[in-house]
Amino acid sequence: DGGITQSPKYLFRKEGQNVTLSCEQNLNHDAMYWYRQDPGQGLRLIYYSQIVNDFQKGDIAEGYSVSREKKESFPLTVTSAQKNPTAFYLCASSIAGRSAYGYTFGSGTRLTVV
Amino acid sequence: KQEVTQIPAALSVPEGENLVLNCSFTDSAIYNLQWFRQDPGKGLTSLLLIQSSQREQTSGRLNASLDKSSGRSTLYIAASQPGDSATYLCAVRLGNNNDMRFGAGTRLTVKP
Image 1 (tube, each protein chain N blue to C red):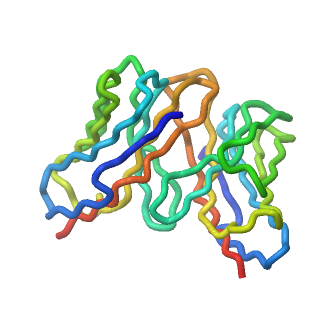
Image 2 (cartoon, each protein chain N blue to C red):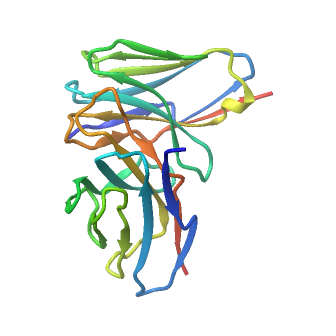
C-alpha cells in the first residue's frame, strides 16, 4: 500500500542535542511538507519542498533544517537552536499541479525534550 | 495572509444527531479546501476535498460544502456515531505552489 511513513513514533531529546525525524513516501508525490502541531493550535508550516534538491522555509523555520536528496525522502532535523521543540511533528505530501488532489499525512512523531 | 477559523472549538452531541462543523477563511481565492479527521496522538486522515470550482462533496454520511464568496465551508455529519468522536480540521490552499493553511480544529464528542 502507498503511504507516508514517519519514524520514530516517539523521540526524546536532551538539551543541546540535534535530532532527525524521518519521513518517507512511496506515493510518487512531488511535494513534501513538515508541520508542527501544538495543543489547541492549528498546524504550522516548518519547511516544504516542491522538487528534489530544493526547499523553502515556512512560517516557523528557525531552529530546523531539512534536505531533499531523493523524491521519496524529506528528513527534518531539529537543532539545538530550537528553544521549544516539544511538539507533535507531521509530514505530508501532495501531487503538484492538480487541484483535485490534496495532502496525505504520515502518522506523526512526538518529540519531547528531557 | 490566509487565516482559517473553526467554530466551535469543541462540540458534544448525543448519538444519532445530525451536526454541522464550520470553517471560515479570509482569502476567497482558494485552490482547494480539505477536511481532515485526527484521532488523539495520530496523523490526519483526509475526509473530503473540494476544488475551487466545486460547491460540495459527499462521502457516506459526510457532506462538505464550499461558498468561496462568503469564505465559508461546512462539514455536515449525518446520524452521528460514537466512532465519529475526533478532532476535525479544515485546511485551505491558495495555489498550486502554496502550502495549506489550517484551522485549529473542532473537537467532536458523540455520546452513546
